[in-house]
Amino acid sequence: MTPPESARSLAAAPPLGTAADIARSVRAGERSAREVVDAHLATVAANEAEVHAFNLVLADEARAAADVLDRRIAAGEDPGPLAGVPVALKDNLCTRGIPTTCSSKILDGWCPPYDATVVQRLAGAGAIAIGKTNLDEFAMGSSTENSAFGATRNPHDPSRVPGGSSGGSAAAVAAGFVPISLGSDTGGSIRQPAALCGVVGLKPTYGLVSRYGLIAFASSLDQIGPFSTTVADAALLLDVIAGHDPHDSTSIPEPVPSYSDTLDRGVEGLRIGLITELMGDGIAPDVAARVREAAAALQAAGARVGEASVPAALLGLSAYYLIAPAEASSNLARYDGVRYGLRVDAPTTGEMMTATRTAGFGAEVKRRIMLGTYALSAGYYDAYYGKALKVRTLIIRDFAAAYEHFDLLLSPTSPTTAFALGDKTADPLSMYLNDVCTIPTNLSGDAAISVPFGTGDDGLPVGVQLLAPALGEVPLLRAAAVLEEAAP
Amino acid sequence: MSERITRDDVAHVATLAKLALSDAELDEFTDQLAAVLDHAADVEALDVADVAPTAHPYPLANVLRADELAPTLDRDEVLAQAPAVTDGRFLVPAILGEEP
Image (cartoon, rainbow over all chains, first blue to last red; front, side):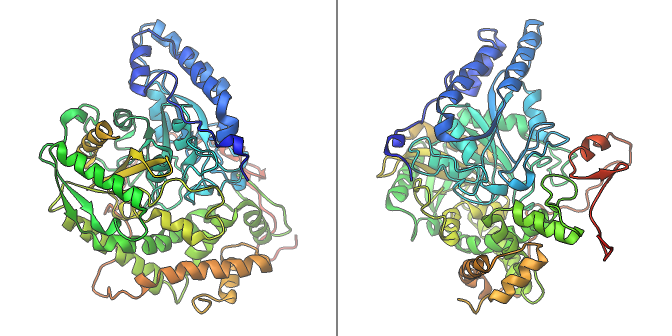
Protein backbone atom coordinates (compact mmCIF):
# COMPACT_ATOMS: atom_id res chain seq x y z
CA MET A 1 0.00 0.00 0.00
CA THR A 2 3.02 2.32 0.32
CA PRO A 3 4.78 3.40 -2.86
CA PRO A 4 8.42 2.24 -2.70
CA GLU A 5 9.85 5.73 -3.12
CA SER A 6 8.23 6.84 0.16
CA ALA A 7 10.27 4.32 2.18
CA ARG A 8 13.10 6.85 2.51
CA SER A 9 13.70 8.12 6.04
CA LEU A 10 12.10 11.45 6.93
CA ALA A 11 13.64 11.50 10.41
CA ALA A 12 15.46 14.73 11.15
CA ALA A 13 16.72 16.76 14.07
CA PRO A 14 14.65 19.90 14.74
CA PRO A 15 16.13 22.78 12.69
CA LEU A 16 17.30 24.97 15.59
CA GLY A 17 18.28 22.39 18.21
CA THR A 18 16.65 21.46 21.47
CA ALA A 19 13.94 23.34 23.36
CA ALA A 20 16.57 24.36 25.91
CA ASP A 21 18.79 25.79 23.13
CA ILE A 22 15.89 27.69 21.56
CA ALA A 23 14.61 29.14 24.85
CA ARG A 24 18.10 30.28 25.80
CA SER A 25 18.74 32.03 22.49
CA VAL A 26 15.29 33.65 22.40
CA ARG A 27 15.58 34.89 26.00
CA ALA A 28 19.04 36.27 25.22
CA GLY A 29 17.69 38.11 22.17
CA GLU A 30 19.96 36.15 19.80
CA ARG A 31 16.98 34.86 17.81
CA SER A 32 13.43 36.09 17.45
CA ALA A 33 10.54 33.79 18.30
CA ARG A 34 9.19 34.55 14.82
CA GLU A 35 12.39 33.27 13.20
CA VAL A 36 12.13 30.09 15.31
CA VAL A 37 8.49 29.50 14.40
CA ASP A 38 9.12 30.13 10.69
CA ALA A 39 12.04 27.68 10.63
CA HIS A 40 9.89 24.93 12.15
CA LEU A 41 6.87 25.66 9.95
CA ALA A 42 9.23 25.31 6.95
CA THR A 43 10.14 21.75 8.02
CA VAL A 44 6.45 20.98 8.46
CA ALA A 45 5.71 22.32 4.98
CA ALA A 46 8.47 20.15 3.49
CA ASN A 47 7.50 16.75 4.94
CA GLU A 48 4.09 16.86 6.62
CA ALA A 49 2.29 15.54 3.54
CA GLU A 50 4.27 12.29 3.86
CA VAL A 51 4.31 12.01 7.66
CA HIS A 52 0.80 13.27 8.49
CA ALA A 53 1.69 14.08 12.09
CA PHE A 54 -0.92 16.83 12.36
CA ASN A 55 -4.69 17.07 12.26
CA LEU A 56 -4.30 20.84 12.19
CA VAL A 57 -1.27 23.12 11.66
CA LEU A 58 -1.69 26.47 13.43
CA ALA A 59 0.64 28.46 11.15
CA ASP A 60 -1.09 31.85 11.37
CA GLU A 61 -1.82 31.55 15.09
CA ALA A 62 1.80 30.50 15.80
CA ARG A 63 3.26 33.41 13.81
CA ALA A 64 0.96 35.87 15.58
CA ALA A 65 1.87 34.44 19.00
CA ALA A 66 5.58 34.67 18.09
CA ASP A 67 5.22 38.33 17.12
CA VAL A 68 3.52 39.09 20.44
CA LEU A 69 6.33 37.30 22.27
CA ASP A 70 9.00 39.23 20.36
CA ARG A 71 7.34 42.51 21.30
CA ARG A 72 7.33 41.46 24.96
CA ILE A 73 11.03 40.60 24.80
CA ALA A 74 11.76 43.94 23.12
CA ALA A 75 9.94 45.59 26.02
CA GLY A 76 12.27 43.89 28.48
CA GLU A 77 10.01 41.07 29.64
CA ASP A 78 11.21 37.49 30.16
CA PRO A 79 8.56 35.27 28.57
CA GLY A 80 9.65 32.17 30.50
CA PRO A 81 11.63 28.93 30.37
CA LEU A 82 10.15 27.82 27.02
CA ALA A 83 10.43 31.22 25.33
CA GLY A 84 9.68 30.86 21.64
CA VAL A 85 9.75 27.04 21.70
CA PRO A 86 7.37 25.49 19.14
CA VAL A 87 5.27 22.67 20.62
CA ALA A 88 2.81 20.21 19.15
CA LEU A 89 -0.27 19.18 21.15
CA LYS A 90 -2.03 15.84 20.93
CA ASP A 91 -5.48 16.53 19.54
CA ASN A 92 -7.20 15.30 22.71
CA LEU A 93 -5.98 18.38 24.62
CA CYS A 94 -8.55 21.17 24.68
CA THR A 95 -7.54 24.43 23.00
CA ARG A 96 -9.99 27.30 23.37
CA GLY A 97 -11.60 28.27 20.08
CA ILE A 98 -9.37 25.84 18.14
CA PRO A 99 -10.82 22.54 16.83
CA THR A 100 -10.11 19.55 19.08
CA THR A 101 -11.16 16.28 17.48
CA CYS A 102 -9.64 13.25 19.27
CA SER A 103 -9.29 12.10 15.63
CA SER A 104 -12.99 11.23 15.78
CA LYS A 105 -15.80 12.22 13.47
CA ILE A 106 -18.00 12.60 16.52
CA LEU A 107 -16.11 15.77 17.55
CA ASP A 108 -15.56 17.08 14.04
CA GLY A 109 -15.74 20.87 14.08
CA TRP A 110 -15.95 21.19 17.89
CA CYS A 111 -14.07 24.16 19.37
CA PRO A 112 -13.60 23.83 23.15
CA PRO A 113 -14.70 26.77 25.29
CA TYR A 114 -11.59 26.45 27.48
CA ASP A 115 -7.89 25.57 27.41
CA ALA A 116 -6.45 22.48 29.10
CA THR A 117 -4.32 23.40 32.12
CA VAL A 118 -1.19 22.12 30.35
CA VAL A 119 -1.97 24.32 27.34
CA GLN A 120 -2.25 27.35 29.63
CA ARG A 121 0.99 26.46 31.40
CA LEU A 122 2.87 26.07 28.12
CA ALA A 123 1.64 29.46 26.92
CA GLY A 124 2.55 30.97 30.29
CA ALA A 125 6.10 29.63 29.89
CA GLY A 126 6.48 31.22 26.44
CA ALA A 127 5.94 28.10 24.31
CA ILE A 128 4.11 28.44 20.99
CA ALA A 129 1.62 25.79 19.84
CA ILE A 130 2.12 25.07 16.14
CA GLY A 131 -0.36 22.23 15.68
CA LYS A 132 -2.73 19.57 16.97
CA THR A 133 -1.37 16.07 16.38
CA ASN A 134 -3.02 12.93 15.09
CA LEU A 135 -3.91 10.02 17.39
CA ASP A 136 -5.81 6.78 17.44
CA GLU A 137 -9.44 7.82 17.87
CA PHE A 138 -9.97 8.80 21.53
CA ALA A 139 -6.42 7.49 22.18
CA MET A 140 -7.56 3.89 21.64
CA GLY A 141 -4.83 2.10 19.74
CA SER A 142 -1.13 1.42 19.43
CA SER A 143 -0.43 2.49 15.84
CA THR A 144 -2.32 5.76 15.07
CA GLU A 145 -4.10 3.83 12.32
CA ASN A 146 -7.48 4.16 14.11
CA SER A 147 -7.76 7.84 13.17
CA ALA A 148 -10.79 9.18 11.33
CA PHE A 149 -8.35 11.40 9.42
CA GLY A 150 -5.92 8.73 8.18
CA ALA A 151 -2.78 7.11 9.59
CA THR A 152 0.42 8.87 10.67
CA ARG A 153 3.67 7.45 9.22
CA ASN A 154 6.87 6.65 11.10
CA PRO A 155 9.47 9.22 9.96
CA HIS A 156 12.23 6.58 10.14
CA ASP A 157 10.36 4.46 7.56
CA PRO A 158 7.04 5.76 6.23
CA SER A 159 5.87 2.21 5.45
CA ARG A 160 5.83 1.57 9.23
CA VAL A 161 3.53 2.82 11.97
CA PRO A 162 4.73 5.46 14.45
CA GLY A 163 3.09 3.58 17.33
CA GLY A 164 0.18 5.01 19.23
CA SER A 165 -1.94 6.37 20.40
CA SER A 166 0.17 9.57 20.52
CA GLY A 167 1.75 8.71 17.14
CA GLY A 168 1.38 12.22 15.75
CA SER A 169 3.16 13.81 18.70
CA ALA A 170 6.00 11.26 18.49
CA ALA A 171 6.33 11.58 14.71
CA ALA A 172 6.31 15.40 14.91
CA VAL A 173 9.41 15.29 17.12
CA ALA A 174 11.11 12.51 15.13
CA ALA A 175 10.55 14.42 11.86
CA GLY A 176 12.04 17.60 13.33
CA PHE A 177 8.76 19.53 13.10
CA VAL A 178 9.05 20.49 16.78
CA PRO A 179 11.65 19.91 19.51
CA ILE A 180 8.97 18.96 22.07
CA SER A 181 5.35 17.85 22.11
CA LEU A 182 2.69 16.63 24.52
CA GLY A 183 0.91 13.29 24.44
CA SER A 184 -1.23 11.26 26.80
CA ASP A 185 -0.51 7.77 28.14
CA THR A 186 -3.28 5.42 29.29
CA GLY A 187 -1.56 2.07 28.57
CA GLY A 188 1.69 3.15 26.92
CA SER A 189 0.47 5.78 24.47
CA ILE A 190 3.46 8.07 25.09
CA ARG A 191 6.21 5.51 25.71
CA GLN A 192 5.46 3.03 22.89
CA PRO A 193 5.35 5.64 20.07
CA ALA A 194 8.45 7.30 21.57
CA ALA A 195 10.24 3.94 21.32
CA LEU A 196 9.08 3.27 17.76
CA CYS A 197 10.00 6.80 16.60
CA GLY A 198 13.38 7.00 18.38
CA VAL A 199 12.54 9.87 20.74
CA VAL A 200 12.22 10.34 24.51
CA GLY A 201 8.72 9.84 26.00
CA LEU A 202 7.77 10.23 29.67
CA LYS A 203 4.65 9.07 31.50
CA PRO A 204 4.65 10.98 34.77
CA THR A 205 3.18 9.66 38.02
CA TYR A 206 -0.63 9.66 38.00
CA GLY A 207 -1.71 12.99 39.48
CA LEU A 208 1.57 14.84 38.88
CA VAL A 209 0.26 16.62 35.77
CA SER A 210 -3.27 18.04 35.68
CA ARG A 211 -5.70 16.20 33.42
CA TYR A 212 -8.06 19.21 33.23
CA GLY A 213 -8.83 19.64 29.55
CA LEU A 214 -7.50 16.22 28.54
CA ILE A 215 -10.49 14.50 26.94
CA ALA A 216 -11.06 11.42 29.09
CA PHE A 217 -10.47 7.87 27.87
CA ALA A 218 -9.90 5.91 31.12
CA SER A 219 -9.79 8.39 33.96
CA SER A 220 -7.92 6.25 36.52
CA LEU A 221 -5.13 5.56 33.99
CA ASP A 222 -4.80 8.65 31.74
CA GLN A 223 -1.79 10.92 32.24
CA ILE A 224 -0.30 13.72 30.11
CA GLY A 225 3.44 13.76 29.43
CA PRO A 226 6.24 15.05 27.19
CA PHE A 227 7.98 13.88 24.03
CA SER A 228 11.42 15.33 23.25
CA THR A 229 14.71 14.65 21.50
CA THR A 230 16.66 14.81 24.76
CA VAL A 231 16.09 13.81 28.39
CA ALA A 232 16.96 17.38 29.42
CA ASP A 233 14.08 18.72 27.30
CA ALA A 234 11.69 16.18 28.87
CA ALA A 235 12.76 17.45 32.31
CA LEU A 236 12.37 21.08 31.20
CA LEU A 237 8.86 20.42 29.88
CA LEU A 238 7.92 18.47 33.03
CA ASP A 239 9.12 21.42 35.14
CA VAL A 240 6.52 23.54 33.33
CA ILE A 241 3.53 21.18 33.38
CA ALA A 242 3.91 19.38 36.75
CA GLY A 243 2.15 20.54 39.90
CA HIS A 244 -1.18 20.82 41.60
CA ASP A 245 -4.23 22.14 39.77
CA PRO A 246 -7.46 22.79 41.68
CA HIS A 247 -9.39 22.05 38.47
CA ASP A 248 -8.34 18.37 38.64
CA SER A 249 -9.46 16.69 41.86
CA THR A 250 -7.00 13.83 41.23
CA SER A 251 -4.04 16.19 40.98
CA ILE A 252 -1.55 15.69 43.82
CA PRO A 253 -1.63 18.72 46.17
CA GLU A 254 2.12 18.78 46.88
CA PRO A 255 4.94 21.05 45.75
CA VAL A 256 7.12 19.65 42.95
CA PRO A 257 10.92 19.70 42.72
CA SER A 258 12.94 20.96 39.75
CA TYR A 259 13.61 18.02 37.44
CA SER A 260 16.16 19.92 35.34
CA ASP A 261 18.41 20.89 38.24
CA THR A 262 19.21 17.32 39.30
CA LEU A 263 19.68 15.72 35.90
CA ASP A 264 23.47 15.56 35.94
CA ARG A 265 23.83 13.61 39.18
CA GLY A 266 24.33 10.20 37.55
CA VAL A 267 23.35 6.76 38.84
CA GLU A 268 26.21 6.03 41.25
CA GLY A 269 24.77 3.77 43.95
CA LEU A 270 21.26 3.53 42.46
CA ARG A 271 19.84 0.00 42.52
CA ILE A 272 18.25 -0.88 39.18
CA GLY A 273 16.35 -4.13 38.55
CA LEU A 274 15.74 -5.74 35.17
CA ILE A 275 12.15 -7.08 35.19
CA THR A 276 12.61 -10.75 34.29
CA GLU A 277 8.91 -11.29 33.48
CA LEU A 278 9.16 -8.68 30.70
CA MET A 279 12.25 -10.21 29.05
CA GLY A 280 10.76 -13.55 28.02
CA ASP A 281 8.36 -14.85 25.39
CA GLY A 282 7.08 -12.28 22.95
CA ILE A 283 10.03 -9.90 23.30
CA ALA A 284 12.02 -9.79 20.05
CA PRO A 285 15.63 -10.96 20.54
CA ASP A 286 17.11 -7.74 19.11
CA VAL A 287 15.02 -5.63 21.51
CA ALA A 288 15.97 -7.84 24.48
CA ALA A 289 19.65 -7.52 23.48
CA ARG A 290 19.46 -3.69 23.55
CA VAL A 291 17.82 -3.81 27.01
CA ARG A 292 20.63 -6.00 28.34
CA GLU A 293 23.20 -3.59 26.85
CA ALA A 294 21.36 -0.73 28.56
CA ALA A 295 21.56 -2.62 31.86
CA ALA A 296 25.30 -3.08 31.35
CA ALA A 297 25.70 0.62 30.56
CA LEU A 298 23.93 1.60 33.78
CA GLN A 299 26.14 -0.81 35.71
CA ALA A 300 29.25 0.67 34.08
CA ALA A 301 28.04 4.13 35.16
CA GLY A 302 27.97 3.02 38.80
CA ALA A 303 24.45 1.61 39.29
CA ARG A 304 23.97 -1.71 41.04
CA VAL A 305 22.01 -3.72 38.49
CA GLY A 306 20.21 -6.97 39.31
CA GLU A 307 17.24 -9.05 38.30
CA ALA A 308 13.82 -8.00 39.62
CA SER A 309 10.58 -9.95 39.70
CA VAL A 310 7.13 -8.43 39.21
CA PRO A 311 5.08 -11.62 38.68
CA ALA A 312 1.69 -9.89 38.34
CA ALA A 313 3.00 -7.68 35.52
CA LEU A 314 2.03 -10.39 33.04
CA LEU A 315 -1.58 -10.19 34.23
CA GLY A 316 -1.61 -6.49 33.46
CA LEU A 317 -2.65 -6.83 29.84
CA SER A 318 -5.83 -8.76 30.63
CA ALA A 319 -6.72 -6.52 33.55
CA TYR A 320 -6.12 -3.40 31.48
CA TYR A 321 -8.28 -4.52 28.59
CA LEU A 322 -11.16 -4.94 31.04
CA ILE A 323 -10.60 -1.82 33.18
CA ALA A 324 -9.79 0.69 30.43
CA PRO A 325 -12.78 -0.25 28.22
CA ALA A 326 -15.06 -0.24 31.29
CA GLU A 327 -14.02 3.32 32.13
CA ALA A 328 -14.19 4.31 28.45
CA SER A 329 -17.72 2.97 28.05
CA SER A 330 -18.78 5.33 30.83
CA ASN A 331 -16.67 8.32 29.72
CA LEU A 332 -17.80 8.09 26.08
CA ALA A 333 -21.49 8.01 27.02
CA ARG A 334 -21.30 11.82 26.87
CA TYR A 335 -21.07 11.79 23.07
CA ASP A 336 -24.79 11.70 22.45
CA GLY A 337 -25.39 14.53 19.97
CA VAL A 338 -26.85 16.87 22.60
CA ARG A 339 -24.18 19.28 23.83
CA TYR A 340 -21.36 19.31 21.26
CA GLY A 341 -20.02 17.74 18.10
CA LEU A 342 -21.91 15.60 15.64
CA ARG A 343 -25.70 15.13 15.63
CA VAL A 344 -27.43 12.81 13.18
CA ASP A 345 -31.09 13.82 13.13
CA ALA A 346 -33.80 11.29 13.99
CA PRO A 347 -37.41 11.60 15.18
CA THR A 348 -36.78 10.84 18.87
CA THR A 349 -33.89 11.63 21.19
CA GLY A 350 -33.10 7.95 21.73
CA GLU A 351 -32.94 7.30 17.99
CA MET A 352 -30.91 10.49 17.47
CA MET A 353 -28.35 9.33 20.06
CA THR A 354 -28.00 5.88 18.47
CA ALA A 355 -27.73 7.33 14.96
CA THR A 356 -25.14 9.89 16.11
CA ARG A 357 -22.95 7.39 17.98
CA THR A 358 -23.19 4.82 15.19
CA ALA A 359 -22.06 7.35 12.56
CA GLY A 360 -19.55 9.19 14.76
CA PHE A 361 -17.44 6.44 16.36
CA GLY A 362 -14.94 4.26 14.48
CA ALA A 363 -14.70 0.46 14.81
CA GLU A 364 -12.07 0.32 17.58
CA VAL A 365 -13.96 2.79 19.76
CA LYS A 366 -17.18 0.82 19.29
CA ARG A 367 -15.31 -2.39 20.13
CA ARG A 368 -13.99 -0.95 23.40
CA ILE A 369 -17.30 0.63 24.39
CA MET A 370 -18.96 -2.76 23.92
CA LEU A 371 -16.21 -4.67 25.72
CA GLY A 372 -16.47 -2.25 28.63
CA THR A 373 -20.26 -2.31 28.71
CA TYR A 374 -20.12 -6.12 28.73
CA ALA A 375 -17.47 -6.25 31.49
CA LEU A 376 -19.67 -3.99 33.64
CA SER A 377 -22.98 -5.67 32.86
CA ALA A 378 -25.09 -7.67 35.29
CA GLY A 379 -23.80 -11.23 35.67
CA TYR A 380 -20.30 -10.46 34.37
CA TYR A 381 -19.20 -7.59 36.61
CA ASP A 382 -17.63 -9.81 39.30
CA ALA A 383 -16.00 -12.22 36.85
CA TYR A 384 -14.39 -9.52 34.69
CA TYR A 385 -14.30 -5.96 36.04
CA GLY A 386 -14.26 -6.95 39.73
CA LYS A 387 -11.44 -9.46 39.18
CA ALA A 388 -9.47 -6.97 37.11
CA LEU A 389 -9.57 -4.43 39.97
CA LYS A 390 -8.15 -7.09 42.29
CA VAL A 391 -5.38 -7.84 39.81
CA ARG A 392 -4.60 -4.14 39.92
CA THR A 393 -3.98 -4.56 43.66
CA LEU A 394 -1.66 -7.53 42.97
CA ILE A 395 0.34 -5.47 40.47
CA ILE A 396 0.70 -2.60 42.95
CA ARG A 397 1.85 -5.09 45.63
CA ASP A 398 4.39 -6.75 43.34
CA PHE A 399 5.85 -3.41 42.26
CA ALA A 400 6.05 -2.31 45.92
CA ALA A 401 7.91 -5.53 46.77
CA ALA A 402 10.35 -4.98 43.87
CA TYR A 403 10.94 -1.37 44.95
CA GLU A 404 12.03 -2.62 48.39
CA HIS A 405 15.13 -3.96 46.65
CA PHE A 406 15.51 -1.52 43.76
CA ASP A 407 15.25 2.25 43.22
CA LEU A 408 14.33 1.87 39.55
CA LEU A 409 13.30 -0.95 37.23
CA LEU A 410 14.23 -1.62 33.60
CA SER A 411 12.45 -3.36 30.72
CA PRO A 412 11.79 -3.07 27.00
CA THR A 413 9.26 -0.37 26.09
CA SER A 414 7.73 -2.27 23.17
CA PRO A 415 8.23 -5.95 22.30
CA THR A 416 9.36 -5.09 18.75
CA THR A 417 10.50 -2.20 16.58
CA ALA A 418 7.93 -0.41 14.40
CA PHE A 419 5.68 -2.78 12.46
CA ALA A 420 4.24 -2.22 8.98
CA LEU A 421 1.04 -0.27 8.42
CA GLY A 422 -1.89 -2.66 8.17
CA ASP A 423 -0.01 -5.49 9.92
CA LYS A 424 -2.20 -5.74 13.00
CA THR A 425 -5.41 -3.90 12.11
CA ALA A 426 -7.40 -7.08 11.35
CA ASP A 427 -6.61 -8.68 14.72
CA PRO A 428 -7.26 -6.35 17.68
CA LEU A 429 -5.71 -8.75 20.20
CA SER A 430 -2.38 -8.79 18.33
CA MET A 431 -2.41 -4.97 18.50
CA TYR A 432 -3.18 -5.03 22.24
CA LEU A 433 -0.16 -7.31 22.91
CA ASN A 434 2.12 -4.37 21.99
CA ASP A 435 1.28 -2.77 25.32
CA VAL A 436 2.42 -5.64 27.57
CA CYS A 437 5.49 -3.80 28.93
CA THR A 438 3.90 -0.38 29.37
CA ILE A 439 0.49 -1.21 30.86
CA PRO A 440 1.62 -2.29 34.37
CA THR A 441 2.84 1.26 35.12
CA ASN A 442 -0.56 2.75 34.28
CA LEU A 443 -2.30 0.25 36.53
CA SER A 444 0.07 1.05 39.41
CA GLY A 445 -0.02 4.81 38.77
CA ASP A 446 3.79 5.05 38.79
CA ALA A 447 6.21 6.87 36.49
CA ALA A 448 8.14 5.48 33.49
CA ILE A 449 10.17 6.79 30.58
CA SER A 450 11.24 5.41 27.22
CA VAL A 451 14.73 6.34 26.05
CA PRO A 452 16.09 5.52 22.57
CA PHE A 453 18.86 2.91 22.81
CA GLY A 454 20.26 1.76 19.50
CA THR A 455 18.41 0.00 16.71
CA GLY A 456 16.96 -3.40 15.93
CA ASP A 457 18.11 -5.80 13.21
CA ASP A 458 15.92 -3.81 10.78
CA GLY A 459 17.78 -0.57 11.55
CA LEU A 460 14.75 0.95 13.28
CA PRO A 461 14.85 2.55 16.75
CA VAL A 462 14.60 0.54 19.97
CA GLY A 463 13.33 2.12 23.18
CA VAL A 464 14.35 1.05 26.66
CA GLN A 465 11.92 1.65 29.52
CA LEU A 466 12.98 2.83 32.98
CA LEU A 467 10.33 2.63 35.72
CA ALA A 468 10.14 4.41 39.09
CA PRO A 469 7.77 4.30 42.05
CA ALA A 470 5.22 7.12 42.33
CA LEU A 471 6.87 10.55 42.32
CA GLY A 472 10.25 8.99 41.49
CA GLU A 473 10.77 11.27 38.48
CA VAL A 474 14.00 12.77 39.85
CA PRO A 475 16.04 9.52 39.90
CA LEU A 476 14.12 8.30 36.82
CA LEU A 477 15.27 11.26 34.72
CA ARG A 478 18.81 11.06 36.10
CA ALA A 479 19.09 7.42 35.00
CA ALA A 480 17.48 8.25 31.66
CA ALA A 481 20.16 10.91 31.09
CA VAL A 482 22.85 8.31 31.75
CA LEU A 483 21.26 5.90 29.26
CA GLU A 484 21.01 8.67 26.67
CA GLU A 485 24.72 9.40 27.10
CA ALA A 486 25.60 5.70 26.76
CA ALA A 487 23.27 4.92 23.84
CA PRO A 488 24.99 3.42 20.79
CA MET B 1 -14.47 -19.24 21.72
CA SER B 2 -18.04 -18.34 20.94
CA GLU B 3 -19.24 -19.71 24.29
CA ARG B 4 -17.60 -16.78 26.06
CA ILE B 5 -19.81 -14.20 24.43
CA THR B 6 -22.65 -14.93 22.03
CA ARG B 7 -23.93 -12.94 19.08
CA ASP B 8 -27.05 -12.18 21.14
CA ASP B 9 -24.88 -10.86 24.00
CA VAL B 10 -23.12 -8.53 21.57
CA ALA B 11 -26.43 -7.33 20.15
CA HIS B 12 -27.72 -6.67 23.69
CA VAL B 13 -24.56 -4.77 24.67
CA ALA B 14 -24.76 -2.68 21.49
CA THR B 15 -28.31 -1.67 22.42
CA LEU B 16 -27.20 -0.68 25.93
CA ALA B 17 -24.36 1.40 24.43
CA LYS B 18 -26.67 3.02 21.86
CA LEU B 19 -24.83 1.61 18.84
CA ALA B 20 -26.57 0.12 15.80
CA LEU B 21 -24.54 -2.75 14.30
CA SER B 22 -24.97 -4.44 10.92
CA ASP B 23 -25.12 -8.24 10.73
CA ALA B 24 -21.54 -8.32 9.46
CA GLU B 25 -20.37 -6.10 12.31
CA LEU B 26 -22.17 -8.30 14.85
CA ASP B 27 -20.32 -11.36 13.55
CA GLU B 28 -16.96 -9.63 13.51
CA PHE B 29 -17.33 -8.04 16.96
CA THR B 30 -18.53 -11.35 18.47
CA ASP B 31 -15.33 -13.08 17.32
CA GLN B 32 -13.05 -10.20 18.33
CA LEU B 33 -14.59 -9.69 21.77
CA ALA B 34 -14.46 -13.44 22.39
CA ALA B 35 -10.73 -13.42 21.59
CA VAL B 36 -10.10 -10.63 24.10
CA LEU B 37 -12.20 -12.36 26.77
CA ASP B 38 -10.33 -15.62 26.08
CA HIS B 39 -7.10 -13.77 26.75
CA ALA B 40 -8.64 -12.50 29.99
CA ALA B 41 -9.16 -16.10 31.13
CA ASP B 42 -5.89 -15.76 33.11
CA VAL B 43 -7.54 -13.07 35.22
CA GLU B 44 -10.88 -14.83 35.40
CA ALA B 45 -9.22 -18.02 36.68
CA LEU B 46 -7.35 -16.35 39.56
CA ASP B 47 -8.36 -17.01 43.14
CA VAL B 48 -8.30 -13.49 44.50
CA ALA B 49 -11.17 -13.76 46.98
CA ASP B 50 -9.07 -12.23 49.77
CA VAL B 51 -7.60 -9.40 47.68
CA ALA B 52 -9.11 -5.93 47.97
CA PRO B 53 -9.93 -4.22 44.66
CA THR B 54 -8.14 -1.04 43.53
CA ALA B 55 -10.29 1.32 41.51
CA HIS B 56 -7.82 4.18 41.53
CA PRO B 57 -4.02 4.44 41.90
CA TYR B 58 -4.12 7.50 44.12
CA PRO B 59 -6.41 6.96 47.11
CA LEU B 60 -8.26 10.20 47.63
CA ALA B 61 -11.05 11.13 49.97
CA ASN B 62 -13.61 13.61 48.70
CA VAL B 63 -11.84 16.67 47.34
CA LEU B 64 -13.76 19.86 48.05
CA ARG B 65 -12.94 23.41 47.12
CA ALA B 66 -13.70 26.45 49.21
CA ASP B 67 -17.31 27.57 48.75
CA GLU B 68 -16.42 30.79 46.96
CA LEU B 69 -17.64 32.35 43.75
CA ALA B 70 -15.28 31.83 40.81
CA PRO B 71 -15.60 32.34 37.05
CA THR B 72 -17.27 29.53 35.12
CA LEU B 73 -17.52 28.82 31.40
CA ASP B 74 -19.43 31.41 29.41
CA ARG B 75 -22.92 30.07 28.68
CA ASP B 76 -23.17 31.52 25.19
CA GLU B 77 -19.73 30.17 24.26
CA VAL B 78 -20.75 26.70 25.46
CA LEU B 79 -24.14 26.76 23.73
CA ALA B 80 -22.53 27.97 20.50
CA GLN B 81 -21.00 24.47 20.21
CA ALA B 82 -24.30 22.59 20.57
CA PRO B 83 -26.07 21.09 17.56
CA ALA B 84 -29.37 22.75 18.55
CA VAL B 85 -30.34 25.26 21.25
CA THR B 86 -33.40 27.23 22.26
CA ASP B 87 -33.83 30.00 24.84
CA GLY B 88 -30.34 29.45 26.31
CA ARG B 89 -30.82 25.70 26.61
CA PHE B 90 -29.88 22.53 24.69
CA LEU B 91 -32.64 21.39 22.33
CA VAL B 92 -33.32 17.68 21.69
CA PRO B 93 -35.95 15.84 19.63
CA ALA B 94 -38.98 14.19 21.24
CA ILE B 95 -38.47 12.22 24.47
CA LEU B 96 -40.60 9.94 26.68
CA GLY B 97 -42.92 8.82 23.91
CA GLU B 98 -43.97 12.28 22.75
CA GLU B 99 -45.13 12.52 19.18
CA PRO B 100 -42.09 13.55 17.08
